[in-house]
Amino acid sequence: MRTAGQEMSRLALPSELATEQPFQLAEGIDSDWLSKWQKTAGTFGVQAERNKLATTQSDVSRGTNDATERINEAYFDSYGFFGIHREMISDNVRTEAYRDALKQNPALMQGATVLDVGCGTGILSMFAAEGGAAKIIGVDGSTRIADVAERLVAANGLASSGGGPITIMRGRLEQLPSLPVEQVDVIVSEWMGYALLFESMLDTVLYARDRWLKPGGAILPDLASLHMAAAGAGATGLTFWNKVYGFDYSLVQQELWEDAHQTALLKDVSSQDLLSRSCLLRQLDIAHMDAADASFSTDFVLEADPKSCCGPQECHALVLWFDTDFSQRFCAEQPVKLSTSPCGPQTHWCQTVLVLRKPIQFGLGTAEAKGKVAASLKGRFSMARSDQHRGIDMSVEYSAQFTDGTLAPSEVQIFSMTMSS
Image (cartoon, rainbow, N blue to C red; front, top):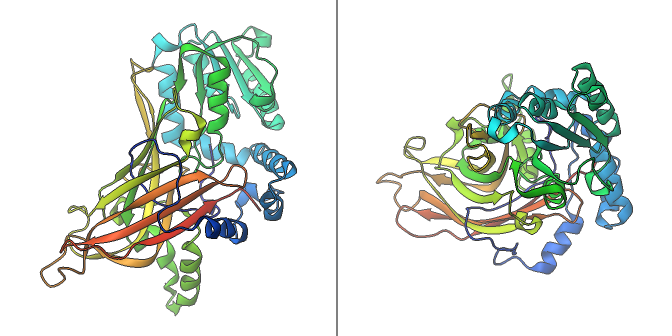
């Protein structure tokens, strides 16, 4: 539910799916140091229409209710502009996945009561109506866009005021005293953010699930997974600054490289820039998870991919992306996968790129380079809620495993993604 091409705030860290562990600091990270870092590290604001965010970092750092409320207001206000909705709707991978899940599963949708969380312009609600839902309630925290949705629904003959199935409600779902129904059969929401969990809209979906979804009801999508792979310099987009029309611009490139060591980049990464097989960091079952499950720490191994990394190449970054599934559990007739992988069509979410401080010689190695080339990267990835509302903190601890079996000293990097201006 976010716009692409916006250079997001800071990000960070390590990876691979595993046990549902609470967030822990990577070994070797002192908690006092981390606390000090969180208070002093700078942030980069969301650009474009998000540049209207009014909360200052100092407000957020104090953790006041005022700051939280300002971020909430700025967050919902940012969805009151048409540009962000055009970007989301014109993302065919995104929009058609929801359309297919809602329209091609009649056993689920026929006669159903549906709650559309964060309905925006109402397009998912209208897909649900086309899929046969008897009653749809769309809720949005942006009063302006909820007004637009109400008019669009009416213009398409689907408003409840005109005998249609759709009712639009204004306000934050957590603050609504009630809905027109006691329970719903299906909850649908496009809640995903950069690196899957930025913006924390998942919390609202889980609240809606616990408050209004009937026992055994469906939630769409119902599964989400976070993935990672190693990548070359091309994934960072910073090689542009090496030479510009024949002039040496390496000074700019170096400054951006240094910033990127603590700032996650949003880039359309080509599959040709990937050097390793992908690794599953985390899988979330939206139908059953708790909000605390979104903070986690997990081990990962990234192995050189012989198809894309035939000889030693420099690994400059770790690339994150996510998939969501409308699985057979609820969409038995037509399961649908929405993937933001660099190996598929690009989406407005792009990929999240974490730039390593030092490049690593990575690949299958050669006789001459044996012992100096990493055949894999091993480490630990952690993600947790930021002290700054709707933000996330990530850390990655990693070590190169060379072709002779030895391990390089481990490195630790910390990144944050925040919604401050």
